[in-house]
Length: 503
Figure 1: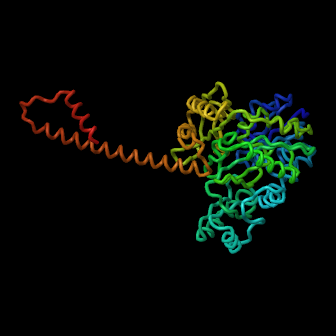
Figure 2: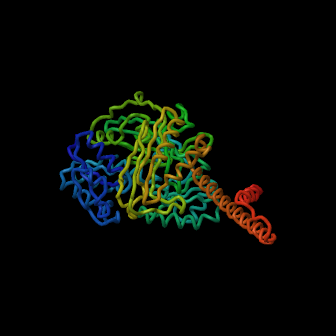
Figure 3: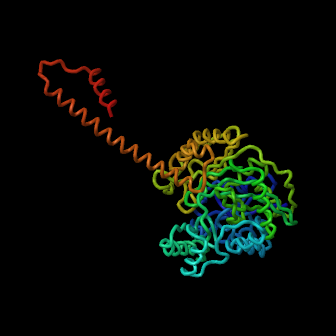
C-alpha cells in the first residue's frame, strides 16, 4: 500500500480522498491555487503546496507542476479526483513516465475511451447497443447534412473529444443544422482543443442511466448497480439516485453485463462509469465512459456499502478485486442533491462571495460531502459546487422524506444557492412518482416560471382593484353630510373584506 498520495484537485472531492487516505493510514498531500489558500482541503492535508494563480489553466491544469510537487513531496501516487486532469490520458501517461502511480484507469484505456467515436466503435464490437449515428467525426456541413438525413431528425451533435454537455447541440430540422454545427465546433475547440463533432440520432425524452464498475489488473470486473442521473440542467446533473426507481433486476443485469463487456474490451482498470440512454420502450444505448470517480458516487456507496474511493486506491496499489458479482447487493434507496452557489431566481447566475452562515443537516441516513465552511470565500474561478447532500432510506419514499428534512435543515447565508429550488422539486408530483427524464428539469423550471408570472399578474390586478375600490368608497364617504356619523373602524374593515371577497 502507498505511504503518501498527492491529490490533484480541490473542494469536496479533495476532502473525500483525504478521508479515504486517513482510513488506509496514508499521508495525504494536496496542491492549491492562490485562491484556495484558506480552503478546507489545505487545512486537512498533511502537506500543501502552492502551484499557481487562481485560473485553473495556471494551477490545477498544470500537470507538469503537479508531478513536480508529487516527486518533491515523496508521494508515490496521484489521485486526480474528477474534472481538471482526471480524464487526461497525456497526464496519466506522464505520471506513469515519472515513476508514479495514477489512481484511475491506465492511460491506454483512457485513450481508447476518451474519443467518443472510438468508444462507440469499441462498444459496438463488444455487443453493446449504440445510438444510430456516425462512427467517425463528421467532415463538413455537407457530410453532416447527409448523416442527419440518413438517421432522421432530430439529431444530436456531440464533441468527439469530451463530454459534460460541452459541444452538444440538439438539432430538430435541416434549417438549424448550419448554425448549431458551427456553435458546437467552436465550443468543442474551446473546451477540448479539438473541434471534432459526431452525430447521433436524438432519443426523445430519454432517461440518463449510468452503471458503476470496478476492475483490477487481473481481468476481474464487476458492476455495482445503476444511478438515475436524468435530472439535468443544460446537460449538467443536479440530482441523482440509486437505484433507478423504475428499473428491474433483469434490465439491471443486462446493462451491467454490457458495461463489463465494454470494460474488458477496452482493457479498463480501476473505477469507472458506463453511461447509457434508456428510451420509453426500455431499450438502452451506450452513451460514453467516464474514466474516473463520479461526483455522484456516494449514492452507490450508500446502497452497496462499498467505499469506492478506498477501492480505487487499493486497485491502483495492485491489489486484486475483493468483490465478486454475487456478493454485491443493493439495499434501500439513496438520493443526492448537488448544492451549487447559483441563484435559481436569476437564471442560475453564479453567486460568489463569503459564506456567512453554514448549518448542515444530520440524522439517520444523512451524509454530507462538503469542501466549504462558514467564513469561506466562494471563488469565481471554479465550478460552483459547494457540497453534496445524500439521503438513504429503506425505500425511495423514506429517502425522499429524509432529504426533505435535510434540505429544510440546511442553512447557507451570504451567497445564493440551489437549496430553495430542490425543496420545490421534492414536492413535485412527477418527481415523487419517478416520472422523470432528461427534459424533466427544463419542463419543471418553465412551469415554475409561468406560475410565478401568473401569480405576479394576479397580485398586481388585485392590488389595483382594491386600491380603486377603496378610493371609490372614500369618495362616497367624503360626500356625506357633515352631521352624518362617521363609519367606525370595524365598519371599514367589513367593507374591505366584502370588496376583497369579490375579487
